[in-house]
Amino acid sequence: QVQLVESGGGLVQTGGSLRLSCAISGSIFGIVAMGWYRQAEGEQRELVATIIVGGSTNYADSVKGRFTISRENARSTLYLQMNSLKPEDTAVYYCRVVKSLNTVYWGQGTRVTVSS
Image: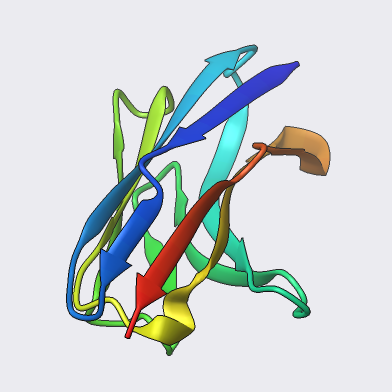
């Protein structure tokens, strides 16, 4: 089992910044990819950014150039630096990890609200 605990969400004004953290614990051996997803009210959950164990990253077009995904200690902590925030970034942000054999784990989410 893998446990994921997100933190760092909150209320910020348009143009502001936040850094989300995801503490990853448990059976972290075999994690092959990590990522951030978000779900706005009434919308489907969508990919924000991913990073694989080799270090390659991928971003949604809507956040490219504004958000940066990174990790510490290879698999133990995942970050999402969010700059130039917009009201449309308002959502609950979820941490997700994928282990070999495609086992997926989700965190409980952290809410980000961007005021206009």
